[in-house]
Image 1 (cartoon, helix red, strand yellow):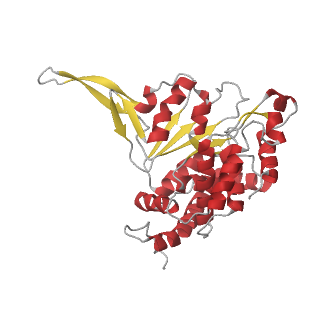
Image 2 (cartoon, rainbow, N blue to C red; image 1 turned 90 degrees about the vertical axis):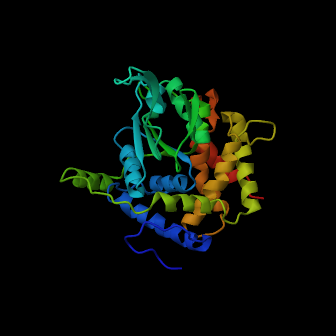
Image 3 (cartoon, one colour; image 1 turned 120 degrees about the vertical axis):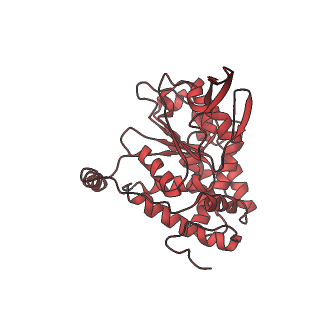
Length: 340
């Protein structure tokens, strides 16, 4: 199996062995392209790539100014995908996302007809910027597209072009002017990724890069066609039933009940649903493949667990009173839930 030429973005008709070889090259090229603009944030970028190759939606949580929007737009450029951005504001309406009907008149005949104008959701990669600054009614406009890959508007259902992914940014809900995302909306996201402040050295590099000249240009390093093939490949890779069983056991452990771990009984009001089991297994498989491993292991499940479970576990008032966060609960589960 040979490497692609440096200028190539992929070719159709590759078998699974060749595609698997290309996956590591695709990861390296994307990391290099993203690194021309993004300083540090290695864990954030790694999780983004897991969601990308799993064809999952991803939610980035952090205060303004941490390059969340730049990260998503840079990824779209590196992939050569159609890119749409919606800035979520309190006055945004569902039609501003899905599209709206307008009345048009043919001047030559005087005949009038309704025409549907597609909204920004008709794209490959949609950036839902500051998604929690708009009310739940508007947030819900994304539900059908994220789950079923289609949009119902103007009395008809329209399929979205593939690949279709939503990468959203969210400000911490403690900030003024934010609305909590409904559980049904959160559950559509494969991963929630917390974006923290850079280190002092990284922040210095950010200042030096961004205050002199313009941002570096990013050229496409991967075609949409090859991306679709790689996304299909990860679902055909060999699987381990033991790993799947561990993913299910971990997700079920988050649900309060007679057999739940002590941490869950004490601090959790609502646990993760079956989508968590699916995404734990799929995320582990993608993470392993990106590192050149054909079969995922328990460590891959543990690595993706905070991103998969973090937004699906709802804590109770006792946890809030005791200063317990969801990361602590998940950390205890990872220590105590057995692999067999």
